[in-house]
Image (cartoon, rainbow, N blue to C red; front, side, top):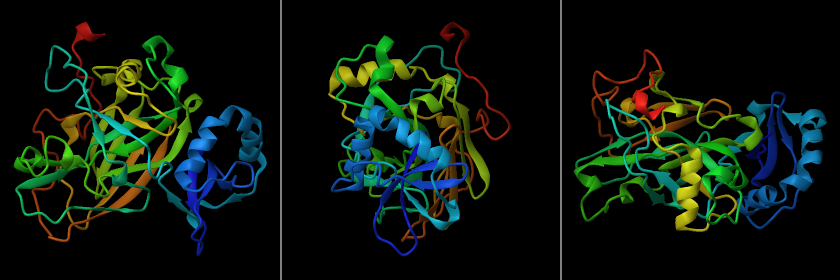
Length: 312
């Protein structure tokens, strides 16, 4: 199943639904509605096994609203925590995996399908880049989960764009090491939460990202230096992960490029879905368009596995 939050035309209420081939099925009357859309979705995650038969029937038989007639919102509008991997993909001929590491990204940076990434109004020498990633949606509380048991801590999957400030501004006192990843609107999430059974193997998922139709990210998650089970074990060893928290799995940096004013971006995690966003820069800055990392990029010609043979 694919869970969404959506709005009807002319209405302000954000409702839970199921994304189906027929459109969006409203499930507000079948679940417990809470004070906020985030808490409603967390309740669905916690109560999912009891709800599953009803939701499966609704997905098959329920009245569907055509997708163009609704507005999808971020399926987790304010996660309690967003943990994001630092790097985590084989790149540029590396022969050894880097140590696994993560950082916290602000939940207030979350936006959803159809929203606008707004570049911050600072004049430091920054460049703002996209990092398209598979993200794990946690079912908690999860603490000290062994990698062999990772599935008990993962409810499903979504997509996240880890928008990042790079350049000198990344390391100055004004941004610290990672604050340049937490500006408002710098965490687009969506378009849905695909339950864990929707994706057979999270380390075999195709991720793509386009800017004004130019393919930039184009990689498979089988190229992770540290696969999904290791990420779950690592994160839950450090802190308790709760329902609705996210672990973003990192990106293949070989497809990086700048984001700038007026661009339209499309993002797809196969098995989860596709969404489109706009980019706005109040300062109207510009950088050279295109892929940033040079001639060894995986894009746009093909998805190329970069890991050394010794890595499997």
